[in-house]
Image 1 (tube, rainbow over the protein chains, first blue to last red):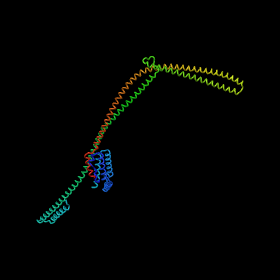
Image 2 (cartoon, rainbow over the protein chains, first blue to last red):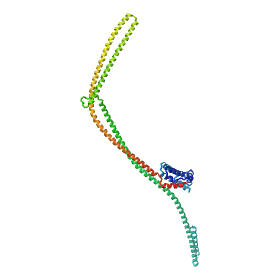
Image 3 (cartoon, one colour):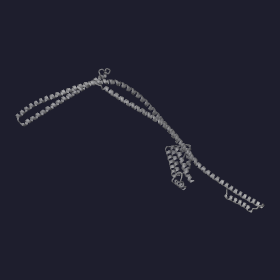
Image 4 (tube, one colour):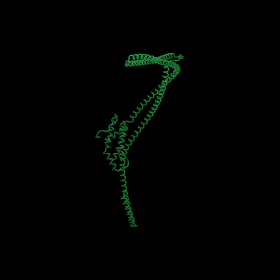
Length: 104
Length: 361
């Protein structure tokens, strides 16, 4: 993120507004890194070229990503940072495995 | 094992055996040749076995390398699996926390059920109070009606000696009623006499107008004698008419006066009947007053009991409301504490987030 620090541990032990801002900033970083249009197009072509027919489709995977994002936003709106952070970790691991496997 | 080495060893061995068999020599040379061929075949066989052993060693080393590669891949996959398992563990903890929160809220729901039952009891008590109030209102209305009947009584019975003040009031009321009736009669009679006088005056005026017309008629004829005679006749006629009318009107007035006297007599009889009815009513009211005193006392006792019951119910209501407020405060405090407890980040969450932040920089 252009050298800017995405996560500040002190912020998470600060007030609630700082925690919310830090989590939203990390969510934006995940969007920019994994869930941009170019990356999704590459993923789609990769799946088509590999001839995959079984398993969940890319649209289902994106639905899962949307559901996770909605859960994170809802938890942030309610001030439930623990739930938001755990949904975020799940989203990150899913994106990491999903795209890194293709790039490897 | 190397297939080419095996084939070479086998072909050489069988060739030497075939040569030995083809020569078919049974002497020492043949035996030596056979032994030498067998030895060469053995050497070739050993060479082939050595090559096969080297191939096997190479294969084992290749397999070890492949196993090492597989181990590295498994390590890489295990890292992702461990992270996923940690996430699953975190989700499991969250679910357990949710279940704990649900359990605590179910306990709060039990409290709410107690509150609802208390509210139903309060509603029942309020309905009972309303019914009692309605009964008391009816009773008070009856008492008011009875009191009005007592206080509107015009004459107490002579034989009732224990209520002298009411007797005096009743006598005064009866005297007033009799005076009013007499006054009404006098006014009626006076009004009728006045009407009769006005009617007589109107008749006289009419006769005067006729006389005036006759006079004018005489003047029109312009005959002094006839006029004089007519005047005389007119005067006589006028006097005669006046007498006649007076006689008729007097008789009519006499009849009217007679009718008025008869009406007055009827009114007197009506007043006597009313007096009797009033006396009976007063006697009845005296009995009713005695009964009303008992009813008043009973109603007072009921009112007192109702008031104490109302006080008790309101005390219960106040106590229930205090309990309700305490329960609501406790519920709010527990909800706040639960939210604070389960919504904050743990050290493990912070470490995970720090690691992810470093990776997505």
